[in-house]
Amino acid sequence: MKIKVYYNKSCKLCETEINHYKKHSDNSFLWIDIVDNDHAKKTTNKSLEQLIRRIHVIKDGQLLEGASAFLEIWKNIPKYRFLFYLFRIKFCFFFLHILYEIVAYFLFLKNKNLLKNNE
Image 1: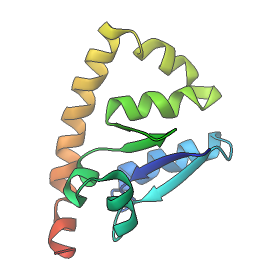
Image 2: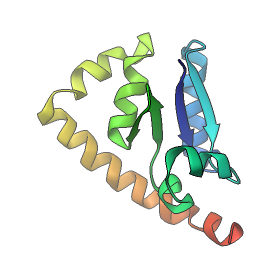
Image 3: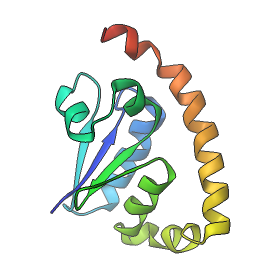
Image 4: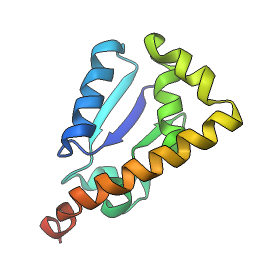
């Protein structure tokens, strides 16, 4: 079963990062843009605001978001597996989570206009 990655393609930083992962991953991923995608909202049971705020991954029916979603991506891309092993350590994960939340918050503020476009 494919790992579904829900991301904001209209965010230039997000799209750049995901495109990089696409180049280094195999076909075990399904990359899904969340903008104008009602199916993404239904599948994740998240609002558009929640989807814009953090990256989401569904693997084996389990929904992961934020830093935990990145761990799942890194675990399944050989080139980045070392990041998975490093950041799955609780102490390191704590710092990854904090850093991710700060960056994601500012990206959310930058992309918040998507909510107005989809009302």
